[in-house]
Amino acid sequence: MVLSAKVKHESQNKVVNLTVPKQQPKRRKLKFKLGGPTVILFILLGFIFYSFGGQAIEMYNVRHEITKIREQMDELQEKNAELRKQVEQLNSDAFIEREAREKLGYVKPGEKIILEAQPGAANAAGGSTSAKRSNPEIH
Image 1 (cartoon, rainbow, N blue to C red):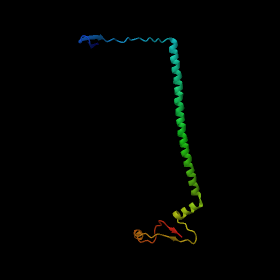
Image 2: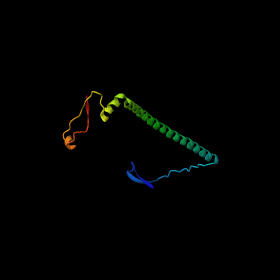
Image 3: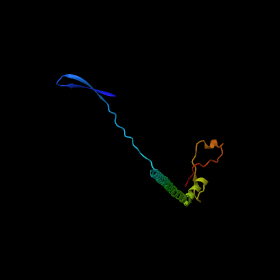
Image 4: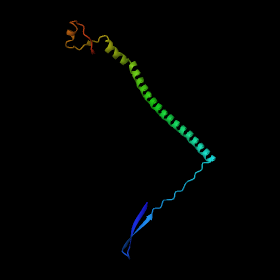
């Protein structure tokens, strides 16, 4: 590629065209020789990086798994504590008595059961005098 320039000389008031050839940068060829010791060194370094890299990845996976297991263990311990409380409540005498009264209709001697009258319950039963106990109130 050729560059051109116009130069004006002050003394002559004349324009002169100059052409300047563009110089190509000199390219140096890099000579890199791979000898036997250099190849062995690269192979040895590659093996070391591969070994340590594999171990680092395995350690990361193990740590991640340990944290997941600890989280699961914490959740199970909380659930276990809730279930123990529930078992204590279910085994208490007050709970057993309440369930026997509500579901089985047990009453203590001298208590009266008051049933809630529902409109249309006698007509739906076909005129029978026996009514279903929905929510008995015990006094």
